[in-house]
Amino acid sequence: MDDAVLSQTGKKTSVANGERAVELLSKSSIISIGHFVFGLPGDTIQSAEHTMERAARSKLDAAQFYCSIPYP
Image (cartoon, rainbow, N blue to C red; front, side):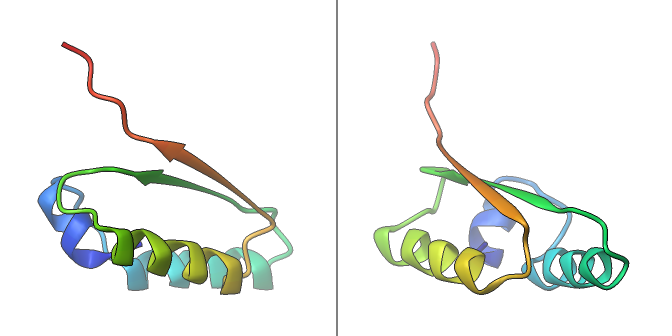
């Protein structure tokens, strides 16, 4: 959940948009599950830690974490 990493991977969204979506789902009593990928271009140890902290503080009902693995 880092805007710089999202931008470098070509995602056309922001952390704020994701947080707002989770907030709306929570208010509507809709279950939400977050999927987080580590190791994308521009990801650092600090941004990964920041992502884990934000995920833990979020109103997500569940979260899954993945490692990016490049294939030839």
